[in-house]
Length: 217
Image 1 (cartoon, rainbow, N blue to C red):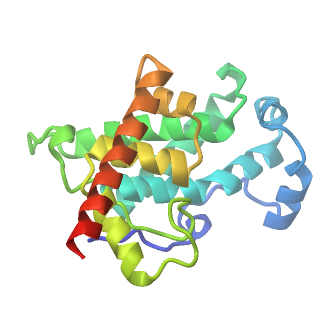
Image 2 (image 1 turned 180 degrees about the horizontal axis):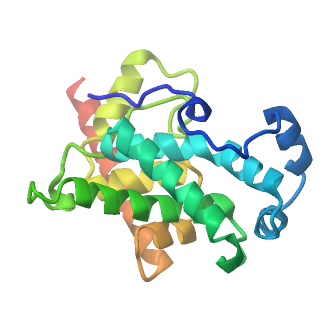
Image 3 (image 1 turned 30 degrees about the vertical axis):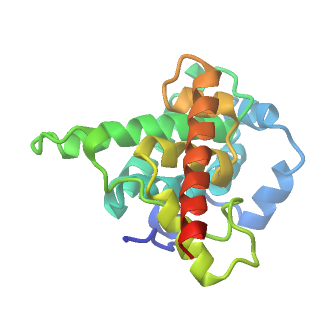
């Protein structure tokens, strides 16, 4: 399985306005709500933009690499998204969850890019079974620190027996810690209960896989 690259996103995506030191930026905005940070950004505060970028760029990159495993595509899309958001800041509405908003926008733009890149292949996105394969990692809440390497591999294999949409929902809920409302928005569901049902179905399938494995031991 192709693994997500371990890269320093700040070295790959460059913005001339990112001048403040990381620790200083994080200290300034650490105690502010997302609504306050977003309002500062909309009002032209470049340090607020720095904070938003530095806090979320790496996790967006990792999510993008789970989706398509194309480093250049993910980086291009990520940079274009942040440039576009900065350019349109005065026209943007209020945001109470910056992470949820960025994931929704990035997901939409990345899939537009994927469709554009693959328009000549005539392969529907839902049929790309090799996409969104999960690499089990320590930051995933599903995985306890004490799990052995063998158990982690088993979990990874079990997760990748789910459908692409089920894997995506699991990643967004447990790894990225998005709410069901944010997952529904990102995945274009009309109702929150659809996202919740998808996660419950995925967890049920995982239980079946592990129960079967235990019976075969």
